[in-house]
Length: 402
Image 1 (cartoon, rainbow, N blue to C red):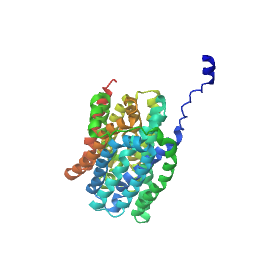
Image 2 (cartoon, rainbow, N blue to C red):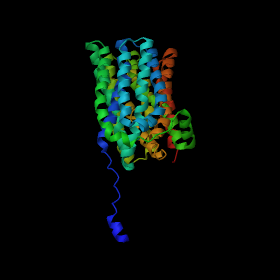
Image 3 (cartoon, helix red, strand yellow):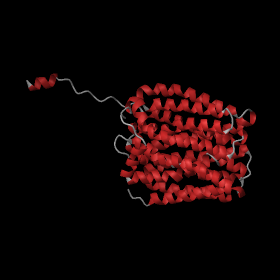
């Protein structure tokens, strides 16, 4: 009788198959490319739009201040709405930012654009980490997160090359309009992906604010150290991506288009770094040690550009910016994979948002530091200060054995 009952009992239901990783990876990489394209557009267009370092600092500082607050909510938003619904929200915010920027170079326009872009750049990384961390095997995590982070370089390179040329042949505001239109088009594939992927991250039921972030970092020294290191690392990345065109035109004596090409070389370095460092971290060097070494590398490259950039022939300057990008823009993927490894179970999105508070703080402080340096000395001085902080952070991570 027992045997008959067992034979007649229905077999336990198999868990539903996971959707494939690749579409989610492509979608989230595309989202970051879109956000980066919009985020760096005012810096690339600054010479044509008449945006001075103070105006550029207002845009970036506002954007990253809003982004820091939004980052804390990114993991929970992914849990309540789904990662790709958050992606759609970010794309709409990008379009709004570019429409605000089109109204001019005045403080009000840049302030409004900064608020809107902050609503895009804040939630996108935690939302991405939440879904990719759910899909990827642990052994593949450094490489997958590094591939996703290439979106930043793809968007920045596209903007560095296309926007100066577009501004030279037509109204520079056309660049903003093109980015806004692209952002609205991107909503369509994000919404199509939402059905398959968003149920995987719908789990958050409680708010995750600054207090919760502080408690999480306080309870985990390794995550706390990463959060502190992300401050100068992010500031170093900003000195390249957000201010290099202004620095190259004003202090290195380059023409606008040449400055854009030199920046594109730096973005190419970042693209190579995000892919290459993912391979290195997966096979040869522990991610934590590699992130520490990259801090020393970005410090050296930043100091080289600041001290010798004006004297370097253009090919040598492009090579220096490539090395700058290789380190200062190449660290993010390995860094976020390490955050995901250390995060409490089921809280990758929230841990990423908490650690990125330090990164956004660096993105906020970076423009303030550079604008202050330009007011009392030169932008090159600001580059040197940031390079020193990055070197100290790198040494700190190299001393952490966990």
